[in-house]
Length: 485
Image (cartoon, rainbow, N blue to C red; front, side, top):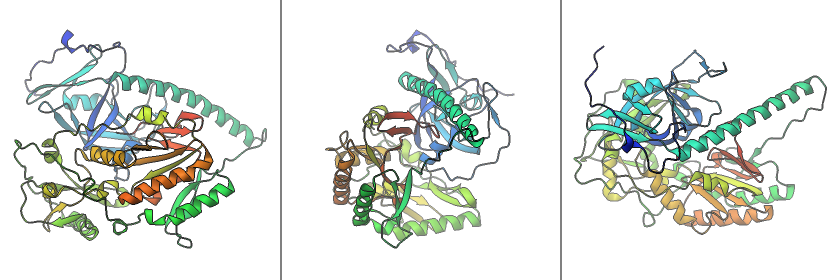
């Protein structure tokens, strides 16, 4: 086997962090996967596979991608077996420019409770030719510009460890519940079937196609008032792009802020077969009808489209903004700390969980930057007039908007993390008042909600990977994995 010569990788005292508490924490880092920054990545030299969990793929809008079949089960410590859902190959980037490296990694997709989002095992580490020092809590790897490095996030590592301990306790409780169910089957106790956590209601009376969800544990009086409130505000929901006009550009637009020293890149057009070209043509036609894209003639930047397989044999068109993103400096606007945000939900009697309809597309691109989002297809060259998915700083722009919108209510009656919005109330009687305030703000800004992803008036539920309720924070026993920021 031929091995290329490379600069030696060494670790010394200079690699020890001044604020390092101890060196026995697991190696937990953050890395970019398919243009998304993913936290809680466990570096595991003992793992013979690279693993990504289903919740993360759904958060990356890849939950319905068609996976390559795999039959071999994963066997963990202690002999427990987990059947993977399949295999997906994704681009993974480590390090900061100029010492940044990107490799294609084949992940096993697993739908099982775990404290981490991703496990980077020996195959992925070998792809990067990475060397890990658990003493220095640092990983180094060769790049054309020298040795790149990634440090361990000790604070996150300890959060993951604590969550793993809680999950272990949850498994014990689950085993007790299973024992009780088996006993009930044998007639030793009365079996109790819990009611559903929510139910569907029509937002427009008599129209079963326009529904949303409400909690099933509200009082009859509160449920009636909630349904009346939602129906009187059905204009705040969107079922298609024609149902919203977007946020006023005078309020916010997305700017690329491209480094003027970077030379524009025009990617060489990729060639697709007849079937995929038809898929791309249909998707572009939808975007044109929605007013999200327009055709252009001349552009300095040009990206390719990528056709990604979805479930049931369908396909999705994405845009490869790798080169454009490299030219854009990182927006330092801070995202909320998830732990503090979730902590503030403890002790609330009712919650309403809301999601914006195609949230990113509700924000327009700055006019001077729109044509830089240009992409090429067999039929022509187009650009986005709205903020597309896949741009480097789109999340920061969206957080800046919602912080401005709800600045007087975040931490009190609301919590917002990018496009995940939570209205909360200490007292049940106050909940409709708090919801009405949030709705009035969204209406004034022109923001629309996705009815299929909203749930109103619940006693608890999953928020940013945690189960929140009046009792406080609990591990989500079904899917207790942390989502990407």
